[in-house]
Image: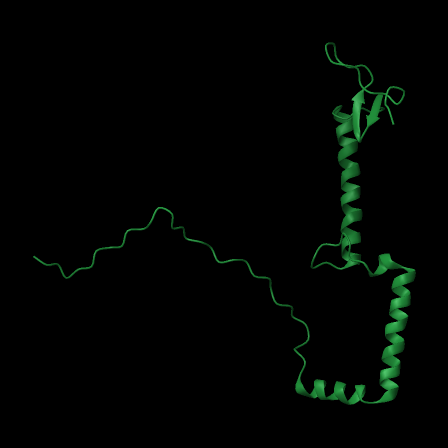
Amino acid sequence: MTDNHQKPKKKSATTRNLKPRKKSLRTKGSPRVTRATSDRLKELWATPEFRERMKQRDKDRIEAAKSNPAAFSRLGIPDGMKRAEAIRLWTQTDALADKFIVALRKTGEIPEDPDGVLYNGFLLPAEPPPGLPEAPTPERMEP
């Protein structure tokens, strides 16, 4: 006996239904350069006055970058953000962090005036609990 119906395919145990990867949204800015814009730029670059202005612009930018490199660096600024937006968000997070620290001090989770030794960014108790070695102090630490 032959059956004209196809048997359903078995799924492999290793086959997964993968989601398509996320793609960044395209910017809604100006359209791509058109032929007219390209022709106009070629025409401008052919003139010696324009070339001289552009050389001076580039020279001024290089001097400005040498005198204030931080203004021309994107170090620490997340992708997709402008410097002003990042600074605004950093000030908001700093204010929130200060509020959380105040709240933790009120509940006693962070001591008001820590009496201990700050060692490599960690607050160590001035007197260790019994059975543990003493915390390093500046007098006992070797350079």
